[in-house]
Length: 255
Length: 131
Image 1 (cartoon, rainbow over the protein chains, first blue to last red):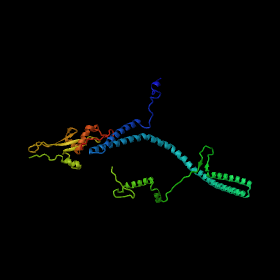
Image 2: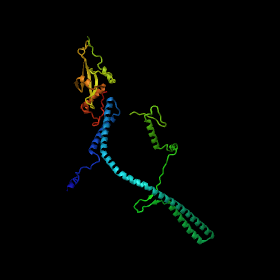
Image 3: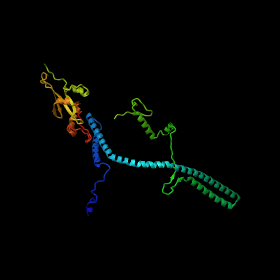
Image 4: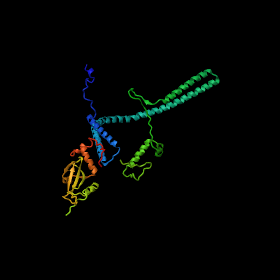
């Protein structure tokens, strides 16, 4: 058997490689060049520091080469990506209006469902309260019966009171279960997903100063403040030599 | 009439290398170290202008007229067209020697009439410096 002699000699082994969504040969060329430049960068790093104007000039050429290589690779990346981006835009253009319409229809109708569920929930709440009150009343009645039977040494009465106690416990369980149950709207056909009310929690800023003190150690707040200060420090009207920003050190670096 | 050699032939170049706005006369080439490009974007070419002074050792007088010669990449060139028609930029001797070495070792530099590319072959540091 030929297959036994050479496992690669099978049907389809000489097919062309799977197409890539980019020009594989161009990517390979860029990768090879990038490696070459990275290798040279190693030579530069080995120097530790520039010792002469001549080396500074050579480094200018090296950095210029790096910048151009980056641009060439980036240009090819953009060129290879463009058809996909364009195709993506076409797909978006085809689907987005449909999705928007569907979403709009849902947004218009959903409030009706919410209003219904809120109404049912209010009724459910009233019913739960009524059941709780009824359970309490049965429990009190059972206790009263038990006490009366005990005072009379009425065995039959005690048995009735025991039964009433059990009934009271059951009523309480039912009331608790009912209170825990959630309001939802089930599919009429069984095909739709059950809908319920969702709880959303929003926080709105009332007192920035107090809020700032509360979050003063939060890294996200530090980041936000740094961003604001950077923005101010880099503004044209800001003089980094003389101006200050409270709470910040202004550092000038040249590189 | 006694003809004395120019005392400091590099005087103009020394001034120009520090101050590029030093007045320059079209028809009066000055000795010194320079660089130029053969084409836009091409590699820098080192050019040296030299003032030849044949001096009588006994009298210190010139035995013949002073004359300017020029050398570019090991070849003698007519200094006048270089001075008049190309843009010669005065450079320090260290830079001149580094350029001569670069033309000797870097194939990109030896192609004087092709724009130099920095992105095809990475420029590596040369340990030996000429500054």
